[in-house]
Amino acid sequence: RYATLDPDDPINIQFTAGTTGSPKAVLLIHHNILKNGYFIARIMHLGVKDRLCVPVPFYHCFGMVVANLACVASGATIVIPADHFDPGAILAAVEKERCTALYGVPTMFIAELEHPHFRRFNLSSLRTGIMAGAPCPPELVRRVIEDMGCREILIGYGQTEASPITHLTRPEDSFERRVETVGTNLPHQEVKVIDVRTGCIVPTHQQGEVCFRGYHVMRGYYGQEDATREAIDEAGWLHSGDLGVLDEDGYLRITGRLKDMIIRGGENIYPAEIEAFYFRHPKVAEIAVFGLPDSKMGEEVAAWIQLRQGKEAEPEEFRVYAKGHMAHYKIPRYVWIVKHFPLTVTGKIQKFRMREIASEWLAKEQNR
Image (cartoon, rainbow, N blue to C red):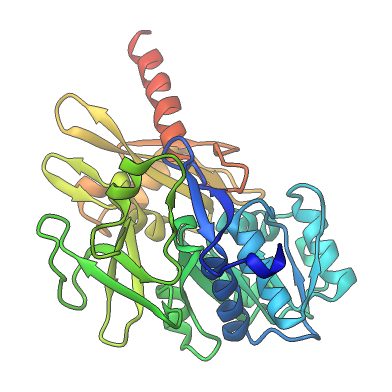
């Protein structure tokens, strides 16, 4: 059986995260994921002396490819801190096993930083790691570098359909590029940013939809030919559904997601911009911004906010904070302070569930 394997043979079916709805079954081949893991290891400078703490699940590309195959390619050790996500167990594992690298989505890093006993753990062994899976606010990246001591933390970007990493910052990148962009594309991959309406490539520093082409693009969605044709065009370009801006050096900045864009009174509003602004607020641990239907404006801006450990605030405080710092139509009309966000099993925020829950809250308030 071994002799009959081909690099283009399917190796697994990987399900998407389901952040915008029902997960899709992504068909990946050997060539997709083995090369992705190899290049990630090279960029991180992983070697046999490294010990990588992996709190992300192995049934997801982050765990299976970005962690598992990167370690296979480099000889690094994998440390599994627990059988479920536990911030305290992760911090303890880094200390006990002297881990040199740590992975996670932004919500995981936030939970670790906000752990009540965070300062008691010795994390001095940390050198590198990857934060990916969702927009990584610059303020959060700064906290990981300064408070965790993870001086070479890298920001990754991609999607399951791309095996999964397409862009990664480099250890040698400037601090500004590491906190403000998702880096440059991995070797042997193509990227372009296009006008959503015309399909034409836009100039540098102009926003458009991010598209990929190369070895890393999936074979397709298993059993969903129509969905595959919608995602991959005839020229082999995978349309990500994400909005971004490329600079003249090839650094990509993700500005939002097409499906997340809010249209209020004819104005296009991108939640990622508002979220990045509020992450600078000293009381904000996590924030998610989304649109809610409105009979007059079409949509209104809404926000869920989780506060930092020991902090208290009222919703109006956050509306006042934004006045004079952003356009009035971008300031959230609705603000809810919550303890938990609806998450996927991989720790990604489900904004469609927030929309459903918030709509129910508003309906109850209006019926009082």
